[in-house]
Length: 338
Image 1 (tube, rainbow, N blue to C red):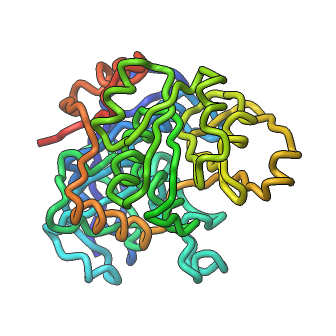
Image 2 (tube, helix red, strand yellow):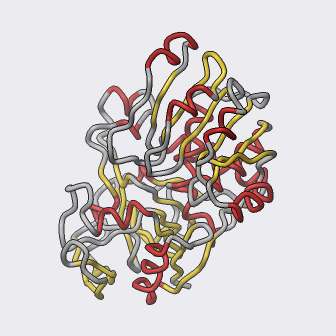
């Protein structure tokens, strides 16, 4: 068992407050815990939501950061299969109950007792601790600098491909070309699908084509969307704003699915009859299980997929979050300790 240690972090003391250097004293390493040296940590919009307590679950002081690429420093007595020096990833969850029905069948991401990394001590720090069951080894061939966003944004858009058995012959639409959407385009193109990007930004239409889209449609132009009526097997929405969802439902083929991974806070509205007569589905999902993350990382390594990231030193975390708030990152931000 490893004795306690001091974690040097960047914490937020109150909702919406600035980042400040913050030391956390932690006790002995638990039997199933692993301590990591943080190498890189992505910044996700969910981190912003947590430090501003938009969801009402944050506890202050808070050390956020849940897209961690780290090197194993020490392991608990039951976590010896993680060897010191191994590079691993830690995402949204830092641990699971491991005993509920969902954990036992491999759906740990649905565990009601799952622990949020941002609430147990996240990756905006020099070290982080997590339960061994939440960690995944980063396979050879995955770029470590840009890998952090895969552990949240990446798995969020990859998980539905597995859950709904999306076929490589499917025609798929992606709403929103940002942190999530740009990854969805790359994944779906490599998956073999015919990919259409929905975006309201003219300059992003060109970028979408370079990222893997075969076609683009204006997400704010009703007539343009109507022109694609009954075209798609699957549409994935990565945006956090309400749109005219009836238009997108009507763009689905019979038995098609509109799937949400972007967090729209306000209630969504849609007309039921097109759902009934077309036997269409509406669904949503969070991040994936550790096994799903491992599958995604193997897929990424095989297809040499890299999130598009902007790099900031960890010491410039305040500037990095200002850039995030500006809405202009292309497309994810990563903090580096190297």
